[in-house]
Length: 131
Image (spheres, rainbow, N blue to C red):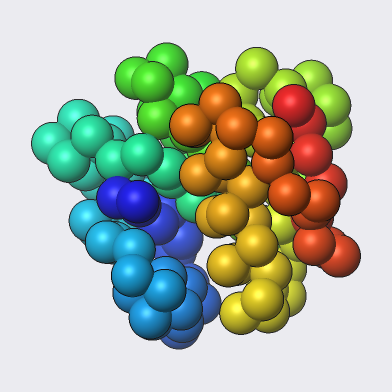
């Protein structure tokens, strides 16, 4: 999958990138705020965006997710502050920080299944589904 990481903490973003690339995914960009996330989503047209709720400059990950989802990009939140069920039209689910490598891999496997309209595997511990 082509994946956009929207995360303002560099070490977390780099770890997620390394895990995804080790699994054969293509990380198209790491964005830390709304303008860079929307630019990357428009330019690269990723299959999936992993989005933190709190971004650089006070930007809202929820607003970023809404805008990216409207572009047809699947979204999974990766955050310590998962939103409630009111976002089921925006995101597939939420991975709770701190993230383990296994959580990241399992979350992306669920996104792959949802995007391809296949039955998703069960969510890993620390992930709840919106859809």
